[in-house]
Image 1 (tube, rainbow over the protein chains, first blue to last red):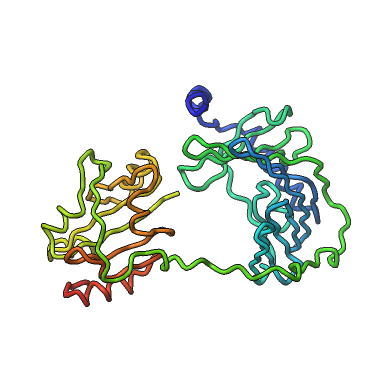
Image 2: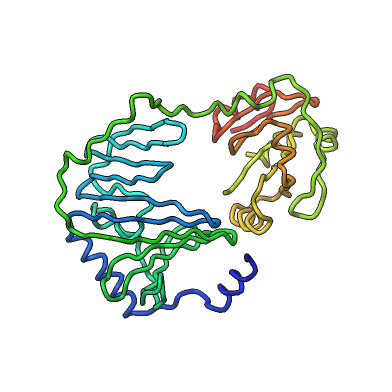
Length: 244
Length: 90
């Protein structure tokens, strides 16, 4: 699977500069910037797992994004992030505008700045003639936005990192529907609790405990042993990291 | 910071958990690290032994014992602890 994806990437190469495709990206942005609202469905597919989100956005900062596992709500004042499974939520002040997550392509609806797109080309997405536009960001993560050539509507987006691809597909998208601000009111269920950050110190070895030895390979092809390194130094800083 | 500490006799071991060698090497190149990165095994054996649940986590070790632990980017806290151990940091 990974091999075939990589071979595909090599054959296709990076998107080329295509003025006609870029014009469609800009037309989509201008069309959405004039719309007051959007609603629809976004299906996320990653590692063969599908998650369906129902979404509504209304200018300037109203939002509902709801799946069976997570919910995001903004009533214009407060932003809630609710984890359905463990009934925990985070609550924060809503941004005045430009607040949206995971709905790439629809940012202009809520006045959010669209990422600057410099590369776009023709492609097919979900069986439709589309423009594939490269989203800027972390160079290790390839993100592409797909826009319908005919309707100028975002069709979805994809992200590839370390050979793993995640894709969002939009469907049933309606632009400019009349929505009442009162319908965005949301409060957590009565039995829900505020999310507490786990105590990441609790599981660590206590001060004064013996530092367990290890001997592992390094990226340089050598082996590093804690005991040996300690033996030739006064003290040691042991750092654990993970880029993600 | 680490260069000055090495000269004073403090060694540094950096353990990466879970990134591919490709990602590590790219990151190392970009950040101009001058030391090898220890790759934790697939089951994250070292991280497990040290109870690491979040990244970054740092341990200060002396005479085979844990002196201090830090979760997150706590540079001020780390510098203070390193000074307490008798090292000089700016």
